[in-house]
Image 1 (cartoon, rainbow, N blue to C red):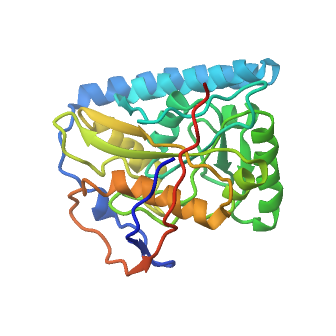
Image 2: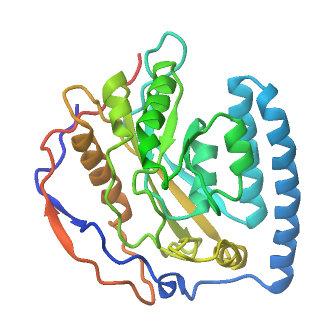
Image 3: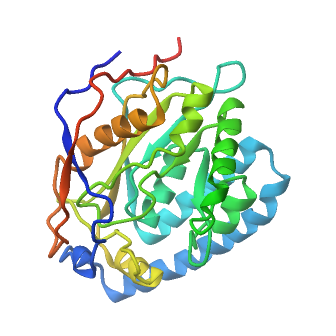
Length: 310
């Protein structure tokens, strides 16, 4: 059992202005035009493979579908020249599977479509995906056929049913990943973690596993180049990533939280606190960032790491 710090971090006030294009105007190192064209060709080949995998997914077993997702995501990351660096949790996550109790609910911050891919390679499982026009254009078809849990922001009345789907998957021993910020950003600040899907962990007694995602270049400097900004055309974000040299996505696995005796809001706050301790420890230097009002948010004093399996 671990104990969280008693001091509060400040949290972004709801309704704060979204990131602006200047947030991602990062003068980081870039590759030449020839390398960009080569990467684009590799992306086309990887997408063809993903399309073929999407056709096979309904016929595969649960493990087979997860493997298809992992392989498709890894091929796309290689194609765009992004390297994934995993920082393991100091306390092992509980094991899951048949006879081992409920699965894991993985909660991570959301910066870019790139971290969608990175999480699939590091924490294979069923993601909760946002549906609708322009949503998840990279692996959308494969994700749907592999059993991902869809949620449409325009149909919030369907949210309880989606939470129920997540609870059923956790009850069956599956790992489910969710991005509780509900949007992407440049990564300078962490948005509030919405608690809705944490209710599934409370109902089932599933460990909540926070994951922090942040970006840097090979030299070690943090970068916002991968961020997908609100209202930005998807192709613009892709162009920045294709042009970036030495882009690294860090995936930090953090100690699991025990849902026993906690409600969904407390779990969301604790998970947010854990992720912010990583993402805000090394602030990004960006050309500009909107001024966002901050409010103090006292957190529960206790945080329990879920015990690892023997």
